[in-house]
Amino acid sequence: MEIKITKRDVLWGYTAQFFNIGVNVLILPFILRLLPVEILGIWYVFLSISAFVLMLDFGFQPTFARNVAYVMSGATRLKAEGVDEEAEVLDCPNYALLKNIIKTMRRFYGYVSLAALGLMLTVGTWYVFRTTESLSSQSEVLCAWFIFVAYTVLNLFYSYYNALLVGKGQVKEYNQMTIVTKLVYLLLAVAGLLGGYGIISIAMANLISIIVNRLLARYFFYRDGIGVQLRTVDCGKERLFPVIWYNAKKNGIGSVGAYFVQKGNVLFVSMFLPLETVASFGLTSQVVTILSGVTPLYLSTHLPEIYKFRINHQLKEIRRVFGESVFVYVLLYVAGAIVLLLWGNPILSLLDSKTHLIGTMALFLFLVIQFLEANHGMAALLITTRNEVPYVGASLISGACIASLTLLSLAFTDLGLIGVILSAGIVQLCYNNWKWPSVICKELGGNYVTFFKEGGASLLAFCRRHWAKG
Image 1 (cartoon, helix red, strand yellow):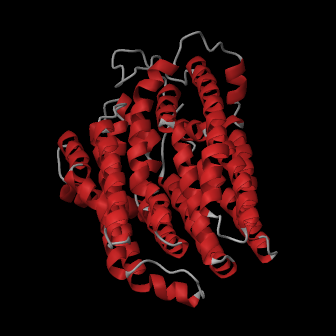
Image 2: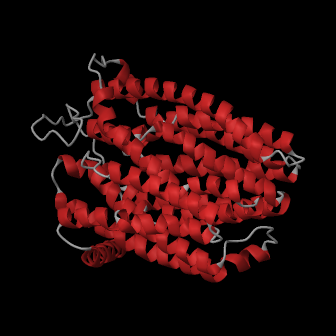
Image 3: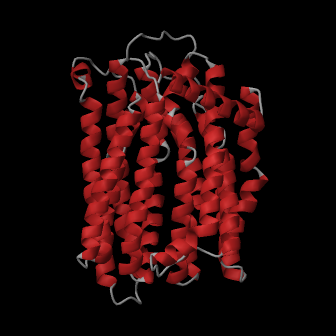
């Protein structure tokens, strides 16, 4: 089976991200006008708790996706680390090995989902109850919380379908599914908010949309007859979990550090600062996260193709894709950052928002730090396509340092959000921001200036060929 990522797939990826952003933009006026500020702050606490629980995935999803891509490309043997260069490569998918991977994924996510349910119903419920004790609408918040728990558990249990679609190279279908899911969420959430159901309507919209998402994922993966192929083969008795666990555990430990950089600070802020400040910081984090998520999309869209390049030792092609990714990333991020700095709060004022972005200086620092974060994240992502995860220790140590500095800043200084933002930036600048980009520069034989120039030239050449064809 040929895995090939076309520019049309990339276009679908950006369309999906446009809907991600567009839905958030369209629903924002309703949320900001119809939800009290303290309830909005609680919603961002919900999201932070969910992000923490989803770490129980422990890095298996990208590891599964990588191994599914290897198998769909004809790999006959999976290694705990690296790619077996001596093993036979089939000219068709290895369905027996794929069936074994699917069996392994289902069993793993079943156990993990039960653990997530227990954690959210106990520790999560206690935290939400304690945080909302002073609110008159506590019963409404708790009702929304239990609906949100159901959403999170279902999202986690069926997340192996994401790995299957990405690994199979069905990037277009994955993004089409995302678009439909976001539209369902938008329609249900807006209807519920206008109907006066508040935070419950948002939680319920998430739950129903994830059910739609998983039904579509199953349809897309099995619609070309792959289910028939899988039923005709024996998955064998080889235990794949130890092989996949070797690198998945590293991704998982790394995700703990990433959590304290991306999501955990909202929980820390909610411990020391008013819910109004939590709402402002949560809104800013959401907007900047969208920006730093959409800009590296070019690279993540091409991952199935890069996995194939790895198997076939096509380093030149990997450098081309990475150069294009750097070019797209820099242009989009800088443009988005300028828009947020100049017109972010004025736009929110036009929407009659009760909540605004954090101050200009704090926002500027946040944007710079996130630029460096997403940049080294792209480099780390490319490193993992070698089936290696060397950044585990650094990520864990960085996460612990960020959490400690953040708590110390909030508890013993008056820096407020500036201290929270600087805690992450200083720690990451000490190592991760430069280390992993330097590893990629050494492997690909260049630097970011040359990658940027080559990437721009490659994309320009593609556009010229496309226009020439008419």
